[in-house]
Length: 128
Length: 137
Ligand SMILES: Nc1ncnc2c1ncn2[C@@H]1O[C@H](COP(=O)(O)OP(=O)(O)OP(=O)(O)O)[C@@H](O)[C@H]1O
Ligand SMILES: [Mg+2]
Image 1: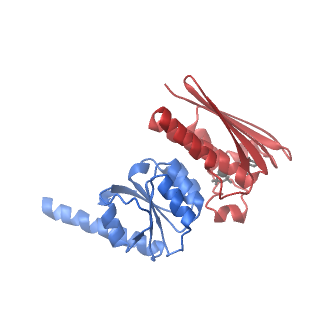
Image 2: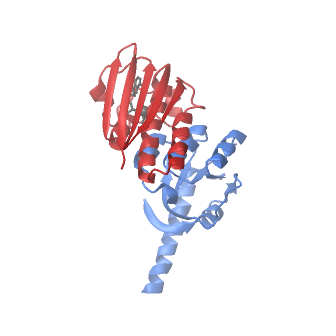
Image 3: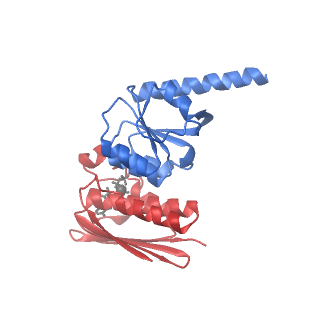
């Protein structure tokens, strides 16, 4: 889904997320949000990997491999799973920023949606 | 330029190594990013199919002027109905495969979408050979 842009730093704060990798390009602009456990769908439907965040409960090495193949640079693991050191290393190796949040997918998506709506409304009242 | 990789059936933690290695190579060679992405997606889907559905396999990658050629040959159960296998949504993936995030029946159609030529030869109870070509200029 194409939305308004949001900076990685803002996304991290909204989700109370913890950054697991050393690389954290806080100014990176995110435009697309892909919330799924289905890696097949990520592979079939990601068009602008560079500006997409993958939000998923799946925390295995294929999550990161999938992101790598479609050039996704930011992955958020939901529901506070413990994350293997190996996974963090795989992310770093491929220049992917890995975040982790205690919240479940439903809350994560809801928070991001309402943030984006608020921003759009602010934008509208400024222009109107 | 050639590369060859062994793929182990059922080993999800190693799956994707071949595709990742090739993706890095193509980046180094300076191929256009849209071509690199097509190759990476098609190879990765093919690699996952061996891991998910077969016992073992071999992946061969070759660049010739204007073309990338990939062949994936496996020993495995084969595919009884190829047309059905290429239908979006058709999958016989086990629950273990689904837990890993795969098994939506999107892989073969996605390989087809991302390649310029594709051929699949399969023999039930023996194995499957999938070849594809991606053109570039
Ligand atoms: N190498 C293979 N050996 C045996 N069967 C295969 C092989 N590749 C594909 N198949 C069969 O074809 C079906 C469709 O494959 P496809 O890649 O489209 O979907 P999938 O692997 O089931 O799910 P997804 O790719 O979305 O994760 C598989 O479920 C399986 O039955
Ligand atoms: Mg598949």
